[in-house]
Image (cartoon, rainbow, N blue to C red; front, side, top):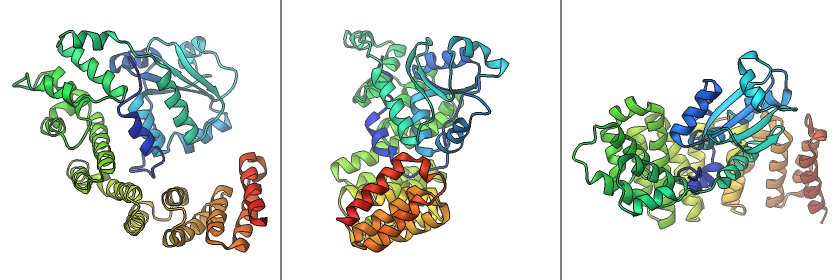
Amino acid sequence: MTYSRLFAATALVFASAAPLCAQGIRFFEGKWPEAQAKAKAEERLIFADAYASWCGPCKRMAATVFTDPKVGEFFNENFVNVKYDMEKPENAEFARKYPVSAYPTLMILDADGKVVQKHVGAMTAEGLIAFGQKALGLVSVAEDVEQAYEAGNRDPELVLRYLRALNRANKPSLKITNDYLNTRKDYSDPISRQIILEGAVEADSRVFDLLIAHRAAISAQEGAQKVDDRILLACKNTVRKAIDFRDVRLLEEAKAKMKTHLPTQAEAFAFDADMRYFAATKDAKNYLKAAQGYQKRVVRSDAARLHELVSRMLVAFPKDADVLQQAEKWAKTAAETGGLGEYYLTLADIYHRQGDKTKARAAAEQALKTPNAQDNLSLKSRVETLLKALEN
């Protein structure tokens, strides 16, 4: 069975998003056999961070990558996540099974403990997501469940497995869910609750309405966090559908359901959804309005999030004068308060787009003066590329 989790395309669409809520990876706190049992029960892969307490790169990943909301969203949806200090006695069993020679060592394993993919060394947020996406694509699909279903087997456990297989393969599953639920008059049994939870893949669906109607019972059985995660994902999928069909009514429905059912995340979600929709429809005026609201109400003066917002703006409207003017102001604030070379390079890029070579050159040179810039070969290379472009 494939482990490509629910609507992998959606994960890609939202992977570059500014965060909807400040939540990173949720790490399972049990022992390794318990993590395997959880992964087997939920039919997921396991992401393992093998680290040491004294390791500098490990600390940086823990502080900046694992806490990244887009990393958390992807890994919480797709994996059982564990982290083990490989030098602590309580983790000796895991350390014996998976000896490492450098830290951090990042692994993707299946529920039986087979290593699917492995990486030694720290990674960026984008790199870690790509690492996870590649692992999901490496796991083959078992055809037995689909064949059994097509042959007429409607055992509830098999239906649930089939739904998971369809969702993780990014294939339509709503009909399968509805076909099963239509045969039931009562949804109070545990398996029906699981099927409703797994099947609620879009906010504009009857299954989503059933999830809300039985939310208390499903939360008590499966955990409130799982239900909240599914509500968020279903609303995101409806935004994606709104973009695909250029249907503003679906956009508004997704925002309204977030406001009703996940009110603490609704405001950030609404601004983010509007930005995505107006970027897709090439509506720079409304996009900028949404971005300004997002900055004022959600991002505020946080340098990292300002820089991320600016980067999104440059992708969405790389040449629009009004968008560039606003991006310039926020990029300057991010650079001056955050002090990172990447932020100054982004500011230099904006000046370049605006045709101001003098300011672009000054910002690019400032990027090279930031702490650790000389050790960042990628940054140096990109600054040199920009400076050459300015010379031409």
